[in-house]
Image (cartoon, rainbow, N blue to C red; front, side, top):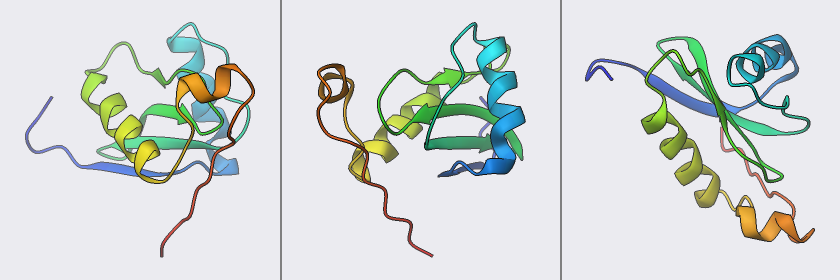
Length: 99
């Protein structure tokens, strides 16, 4: 982790589909299907967290634990369900984007 890195957290967009597939393949994970929060580090997609529950995916070849922690904290702040809420079919994600 660099103290000079720029991290941007945002809602995923349709144009992120290829990068999300790349991240999932690198992380040996299922691709995210549905809305997600993504984290760009210095302009490169480094991690993503599905808003409807499930585990984050991240680039295993780059330091990403701190980025996943930021995604998780942001998801809680915007009201995304926790893993326990989604395991039993509970709450759905609620994301309000502020411009």
